[in-house]
Structure formats: structure tokens, C-alpha cells
Length: 349
Image (cartoon, rainbow, N blue to C red; front, side, top):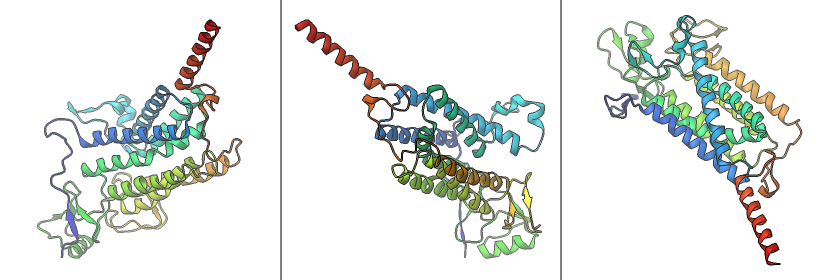
């Protein structure tokens, strides 16, 4: 009995075969668009004093910070060779051996750091309340993140460990495993996978879909529920970092660590292949970084709960201004209309 399903053959990385336009890149555009629309909805719900230009500027710099942080962090943490130290310009060079490849390797944790720094700087320059801006940001990001992981799935990359359960999927480009290993033959027998030759492609956990569901849809639903029920400003920031870190930490047990990195911490050594098992006391790079996110989220919630200006949720009166300290474009139009009518009445008197 076959306990796995093949990867859909009709899914191809290229939108149009032969052209360097991929679904993965399109998924990034969709992700940014979804996050932007969700953020704008929150701004309008609260009548937050932010113009469309300021909203667009916030997202432009936030996305730029995210992309820079994601690429630099990936090159610094996940690249084991010294190629980027010797040739640092290659970090952002989208060609390899004369062929367009795009930016190879992006780190979510680096993107989170880069995006956070960009938003902090933007809020200081524009004199917005960082906690309010960041709360609305955190209510927008997770659902957009879902599309990024769907892009990974379409690319048939970042698949998980070998699965002997009903959720296994045979990815076409997965690493072939030696049929001579006892655990490989056992897994093949449990999943009904035929062994023809010295190597076999075993079913893997579709961990990209696990992440899209838990770190994307479910985390977004939780934060979206609390967006108008939060106990204090800044709460959603801690909820996002802590929630993402928690989900990612446990999903990493279904992912295979990078072959050139392995486990960064191993309290108990295991002789089994990391493609088959992830010992509970062995931790990958992603788990270490996710644990840091959990700690940051907890510390932030404690700190934000003690800061001044702890309004639970504030709906602004645009005519009175807001924390930005300036009227919106609509306010300026209303003021100009009132002044015009006042002048007209004086002329008629």
C-alpha cells in the first residue's frame, strides 16, 4: 500500500517555460500586496493619521529592509564557504556562470531583523508611534508569508525529512538515498516505495505546507482576532514574534537540516541520518533562531506592558490629529473648505 503521493507533475517553477519568470517571484509580489491591503484596512479601521504616500513609503522601506536583511543574513549564516567574504559583491549578484539565477538564498530571520530595523527608522523619521505601526504590521505579515512558502512548494524545495506516514510526498528533486542502508529499506517497505537500483527517492514531509498553514494562516488568524482586543499597544509585536518562533521551532522537527550545517547543538549524538530522524535534543540553526524569537517576544510583551501610553485600541479623530502630530490629507481639505466658506461669508456681510 502506497502511503504517499507524488508531487503534482503539472506544477513547474517557471510560469512560462523557457522564460526566467517564476512562480516563486510572483508569490513574493502577491505576499507584499496582501500585506499592504491588510495594513491599509487597519489604518482605515482606526482612522490612523497616515496618508497614502506615507503608507506606501512605510511599505517600500520595510520591504527593502526585509530583502536586504534576508539576503545578507542568508549569506552570513547559511553559506559555509568563504566565497562572499572573498567576493562580497556576489551577495546581490543575480547571475551565476553567465546564467540568471536570481538571489539564491533568503533567510526569514534575517528578513525579520531587516524589516524591523527599517520600520523603527521610518517611525523615528516620520514621528509615528512605533508600537502602533508595528502592531498593524504584525496583523498583516503572516498571511502574506503564506504565499512565500507556497512559492517554495511550487519550486519543490525546502521539503522535510523522510515520512513513513500518510502525509509523505515524493518530490522530484529530492536527494536520493542509498538503498543499501537499513533504515532506507525499512522506510521504503513502510511506504510501499519500490527500490530499483542503488538509490531511491523516499516520500518527504511537505514542510513548506506545514509552515504556510501554521506560521501563515493560523498565526495570522490569531493576531487578526486580537487586533481590536489587544490589552496594550505593542502586544501584537510580541504575539507575532513569540507565535512564529514557537510554530517554527516545532515544525523544524519535520525539516531536514542543511547538509553543510547539520545540527548546531547536539546534546545527544544520534547515529541515524538527519534525513530520517530529528532527535529531540538536537537543534538546527532555524530552531536556535526561532528560540531567540520566542524569548524576544516574551521580553517585549513584558516591557511593552509597562510603557506609558498603554491604550488597548485607539480609533483616532482625524480632525484632532493623532500620534503622528499632523493632520491627514482629508483634514487639510476640510480645513481649506472651511476657510473658503468663512471668507465667502465675510464678503457677503
